[in-house]
Structures are given as structure tokens and as C-alpha cells.
Length: 213
Image 1 (tube, rainbow, N blue to C red):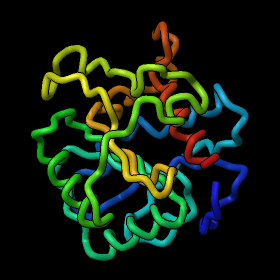
Image 2: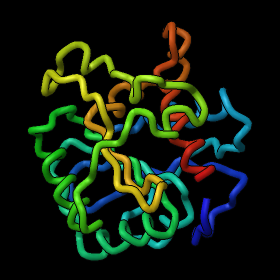
Image 3: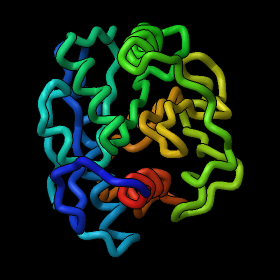
């Protein structure tokens, strides 16, 4: 797994939402509670019942092995945000960025990828659907699960076959999704009972991967 420079408590998971100065970082307020519920429901990981919001430029980000960033609007990171993003990734963190638009021609997708490339010094690359992320807890043999928004033709009318990533060695430092999991997971946890298959299971893999790599 390699040495981590995190100051987190290793035995407890806290869902961390990233607040950034531009755009609408808080566009998916129901996602944290839903993911927290899933981690508690399916795993033995100790999980805090409430998440936290941490500014991207804050060193507090280093306390959390997984951080979630989303939005609809253009993203423009400040210099301090860019520096902390780079430090977070290089010191063991995993940043999960999800386009809440599900639109590769949209302003979030274009601007977020520009900013991530600028911060990391290289563009993101397609993550193989055989990557350990897809089998570290639940098994997803075909790679990232498809969302209802993709199947219904909402947004760019595409089913995205891959997620994209920035790797630090063989570890995912940044994971980028055009699939709009933010909408897919944006409901009250009590409503899971209406689903034949819980669509938040992939979120559990994200957490387990971030805690164990």
C-alpha cells in the first residue's frame, strides 16, 4: 500500500465533500448520507454517521483518504487549491470527481479536466475495466456500472465505458467519472428498499479501495 502521509484515524471512515471556490460544489447534498449508509450496511468499516465539508485549499483535506468533488458549473481552481490537490494525491489521497452533468461537451467536464491536468501535470487516462477497483469488494466484471441517466439518453446520450484516472505508481490518485453518479446516488437512503439492486454498491468499492491502497 505504501506509506501514507495522512493524519486520519485509520479505523474510521468519514465521507469528505470537497468545497472549491468556483462553481457549485454542493450540487449533490444527498450523496454523502447515502454512501455512509451503504458503507455501514455492507462492510465492517467503522464509519462516522455524518460527513464533512473541507475546502480544497485546506490542509485538513489530508485527514481523509477519499474525497468527493462534483458540480455542474465551470471549475477554476485557485493556486492554493491546485497546490493542495497535488499534495493530497501525492501523499496518499484519492480524489473522486464526478460530472453532475453527464455531458462530455459540458462546461464542468471541460473545465474540470483542464484544471486537473494543470494541477497534476498530465491528462487523465482511461482506467482499465479489469482494474482492482472493480473487484475490491463488490464485483463489477464489466467495469463501472451504468447509470439510469446514461440508459435514458440524458445529457450527451452516451454510455461511458470507462472511468479516467491519474495513477501514482499503481494507485489511483484521481478518479474521474462522466457517468453522473451524483444524480444516481442523490436520494434518501430509506429509498434503497425500492431498488431491486442497490445502485450505491460501487460507492462501497470506492471507499474500500481508498482505505486499503
